[in-house]
View 1: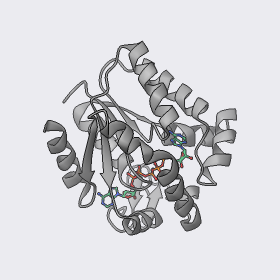
View 2: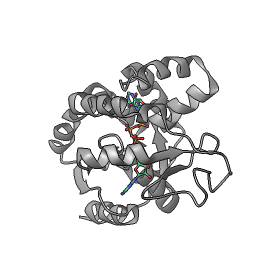
View 3: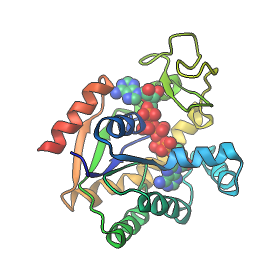
Length: 215
Ligand code: AP5
């Protein structure tokens, strides 16, 4: 499984970030998360961060040119396998990814689609808490910290992501259906789509994905 090139595709809160981390830790694939890169820029208050914040807090996508450039930079630095979490999110991004991969001599092995019902998404995101310091992700229902709303790793009080407010989550789901869902057919038509039921314990979902990739 080492050296694989993977895309994780799925609605907000479907568990892409959780699985990308498992893949990075266990299989050594380099995780490239556009959401994490953008949130890091927001925290640092850079020009990129200011631009990203305007879009993210409304539940809208950041412009294609901006995220494509970030991914190209990140892919250039990977020497082995990679896992793209939250990219591409539009057909335009997918077409430009093809060109970047070709230029860098890298391959794409599969686009893994996470299937999760909308009610589960809302439940997961309203219970998600993140550490503003070390960025660990928790869930007050399924993965609570040991002490009430305090990070197990660095002891910092946990916070809710600004874009996890219910009205913003609803908008993110609409944007996903409109802009990102067309990628399902895009990758299916190329024989690259691997669909997994992303409910159940994250360990179980990880094993479903591995099993589906082996087929
Ligand atoms: P991004 O951070 O990528 O957000 P997202 O795709 O909406 O996904 P989330 O991070 O909300 O969820 P996830 O699927 O990673 O789930 P997680 O593992 O955290 O992007 C944020 C914003 O940045 C976008 O809205 C956009 O504005 C911008 N952006 C990013 N990429 C862009 C791009 N390519 N183009 C344009 N704009 C872009 O899990 C969620 C919760 O559920 C956690 O609490 C977790 O503990 C829990 N959980 C995980 N797995 C399970 C499980 N199996 N069972 C129960 N609970 C689980």
